[in-house]
Image 1 (cartoon, rainbow, N blue to C red):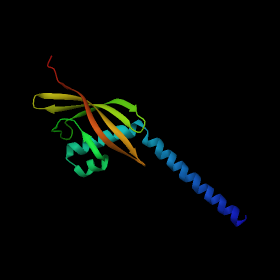
Image 2: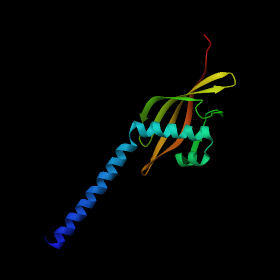
Image 3: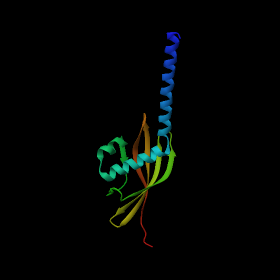
Image 4: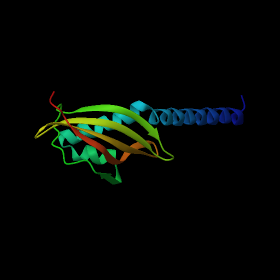
Length: 136
């Protein structure tokens, strides 16, 4: 085989491999599991007080209007309410149930997720509703 043709085949194969890797990463970043995984990682880091892990998960302009919560590991529950697609972001809606001084509280909130190159980051967390447990 001529060296030019061989070099062309190797370059084409390498280019095809790079395209395949980019497509696979793009698909995985857009999956529901990637978004709910980001939510789970954030609250796991929050509950354990791991500020370094939180910094890796959020954008530089991160904001949150959740009330100050005393969340400890394994004392809270998270429920997925679905994902809403925006033009350059996604919203992950969720319910957080956590103990409070007066029993339990439930927060309905949304996490705005931004894709930065090949990473997902949390841009903001916005509370929609807050409820208290009712005693029957």
